[in-house]
Image (cartoon, rainbow, N blue to C red; front, side):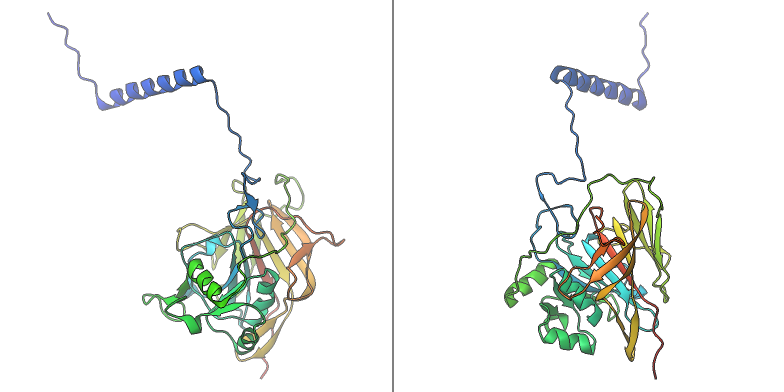
Length: 340
């Protein structure tokens, strides 16, 4: 009598195949000996650190691009915001509507937008990081300063259809976009300097700790008009996830939430100018609060001249070392009353 062996099902076959593969890998490992690779992600791997992030960068001496971006709910999600090395954000109207200026040196998204108009208070911040400023027009005083060549800049009003373009499926004025490549090509045609000798921020190489008091898990600003901002600390990434209007800040290109390693809240003052325009003081000095590594740090901000980088010190005047990574600067001021 012949012995009949029942056919093996797929699960058993897969298990046997897996065991054979593991055995082969184990024998090879024993034969060659173990190979151990340790990588410290806080140090450059044969590269050079970016000026603005303190992280490994392929273009550490490239001159940054500073690009004006919309904050309006209609413009969300923004394209390329997650690739910025540094971002400045502040209110620009008496009712608290904000605007952003994203700075790119090492980050290289395939597209950036929605691009909006320049405001005077952002110009010294762009000068402080030695950037070429890209914008779609601007308010009267800002355009007067830019047309006097106070800073190298590229205006979309003059180069729509070449350096800048619109997406018809997005309502105006939130449908203006560009790319870093297009901006640098135009900057080259203008003869703008392509490299920068900007001095980097002081960075810390110490591992982050959660034992230092006070802890700082959340940074927030209660701007009105659905502009409220919150950053929440994620210890697994040693970074702060960004939320706006109660929703995650998503990069339209990657579909991922935006993170920053360092968040700074700059406290300053503002005054009413005319119509829907205010002036926010971005020169001088004042009080600031800094979040990094799950800690909240009391600080002072300094920027005496337009060409000076915005810096942060402790009460004794010593620079505060920043964690390597993206720096997001929130500039807040009591909203001024409208003069009639």
